[in-house]
Image 1 (cartoon, one colour):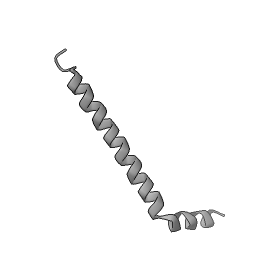
Image 2 (cartoon, one colour):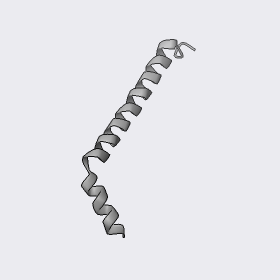
Image 3 (spheres, helix red, strand yellow):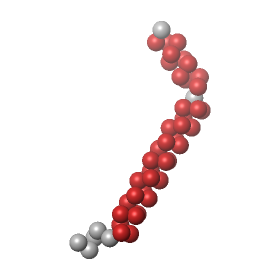
Length: 46
């Protein structure tokens, strides 16, 4: 079991957290940067 070292899990957890943070930030900025698009889609659906 040479592959499963603490460093491996640490790198895996760090990569997962960074990926989740980047996805959350990108999704948040996209939602904040396009309020007109959201309002347009809401009015079109009515």
